[in-house]
Amino acid sequence: MGKKGCVSRFFLASCFALSSLPLAGSLPCQAGEGVDSLLIAAKKKESQPPSVFEPFLQEVEALFQEFYPKAKVKKDGNKIQVSYKCHEYADGSSGRHIIAPQLDGILLDMEAVPGKYKGKEMLPHRVNETLYVLLLMAPYSAPSDHHMHTRLLFPHNTPESFVRKFQGLVEDFDRKVKAEMKEAKAKEEEKVAEEPGSGDEAKSEDSGSDETAQAAPGASEDSSPGEDAAGDAEAGKESSGDEADESADKSDSAKSAEKTSDDSAEHASDSKKTATDADKSADKESDKSADKESDKETDKEADKEADTEADKEADKEAKSESKIDFGGARLSTYTFSDGRFQIRLPGKPDAAAKELQGMRFSQYKYREPQGSYNIGYTVLPTAVKVSSQGKMVIDLTRSLAAVTKGKSGPLTSLPWQGYPGCQVDVSEIPGDGFKNTRLRVFLVRRYLYIVQAIGTKAWLESPAVKQVLDSLVVRPELTSSERTLMETREASRLSHSRAASADARDRNARPSYNKAREKFQADWKYRKRLPSY
Image (cartoon, rainbow, N blue to C red):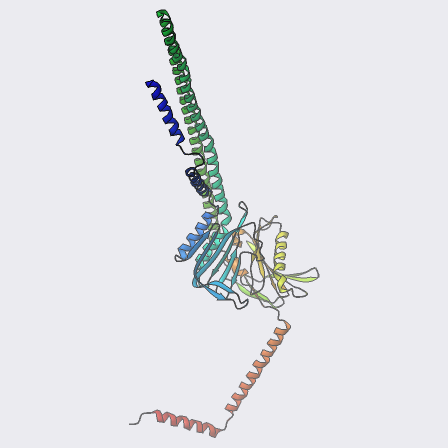
């Protein structure tokens, strides 16, 4: 009874302890579940991959910190805004209030926008306003399918070195994004390569633990028949009291205990073998992953070395080409009154003319050993509307570049003396002649000008060619109102000159006594100023 009472009390205490545990739907569990959900959300937010534009925006921020340390920088995702010494102004033409930089100030708005730029301006676009200069750029990156919309406002006294560095950085947007995406892809591949190995190790560990767990219950199950046999032997002893039966039962129980011990030993040895096999497989997989990582690192280093060597070679070629000087100081000015323009050339050009679609096209050509200059013009029947002049110049430049059947570069807006213009570089021109050319097209009222330099790449990039192309001076054709205004001003100038000459004649023709009187007055004033002794 004492033993049964202890067992019953122990059973009641365990039941009470189990009943006192909190239920699954109680408040503490709900609170824990909420905290877990918040932690999971925070981890997901932290595990999100960074934007591919972040390194580029960091370089932009570093450039502004170098030249404008006190500038305010605001970053929001793929957008950055930099401002320093900015003020709100009232636009006189539109009446709107705009924010523009003051003297020594700066203002930048930059954002990565999906797709290509669909604005009307031909970029890069630079406009000289009264108080500041506006620079618009939108380089496109095909891998990310985004363009970096850039709007920079800076005063006229901004260092040119900063503007050049900024333009070069923005133009390099596509290359930097490609490199960043390539690096991110390599990291993802490394993660994917590492995940299967870790999963196999976990599986092997789980299998080992399961086998050991299975081995333990097996031992307990095998030991239970021994206990049953021992109980049966004791019951037989009490009922029969036969000593022979007791010895037989004891021998049977001993044999069953030995069998269970042997089985447990075998299970333990099997679990040890599985554990050693799992360790060996984990070591092999870790060695394989380490070999893969080392191979990838060596490949990356080789790619970096190849890229650096290619960049160095390109820099050397660019420097060697930039060192070539083709002169350009001995230039003479040639004026062509029929075309209403003048230009500076190394020598007298050859003139030619031909008919194109009922219009006369005049051309002047000067040849050099490394290239030649071509200047042509034609007079349109009527003036083109101001709203469609820019589109006409762009379409004509694009068609002229297509005629060469070469590789056309980007079209660049090039206003000339306040009139629309466009420039394009063409390379890899087929044929036996020169392979590179630079085309400029200008529309000045009814006069259409085409200026071309064709030759070798080094000659085309030389300062001499730039000096010749930039020396073009156009004298616009006067309209009827401008002609009337010029005639009125000329008549006014002639009337003023006639009145001045008549006054001079009257003053010189005055009588001699007036001259003597004026001389006496001058002498008297002079003597009065002399000191008296």
